[in-house]
Length: 117
Image (tube, helix red, strand yellow):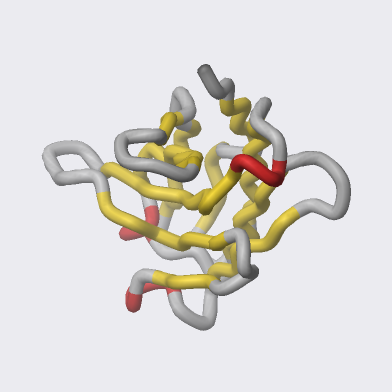
């Protein structure tokens, strides 16, 4: 069982920034990838940004150039720096950890991000 602890959500105005963090209880060596997903009311959960063990990253087209995913230096932590936030970024943001092997993944509890216009 892998525990994920998320923090950093909140209420901001359009154009402002937020930084989300997610700490995983699993070791870095057992980690295949970690990422952020978001789900707005009535919509499906979609990928926002992903970082693999190789350091390679992927972003949703809607956040490219505004959001940056990164890893912490020590513990198995990832960050999502969100700049130039828009009202359409409003959602619950979930951290996901993926290990090696099929079906080996866990989700955080989610953190609310609300962007007012």
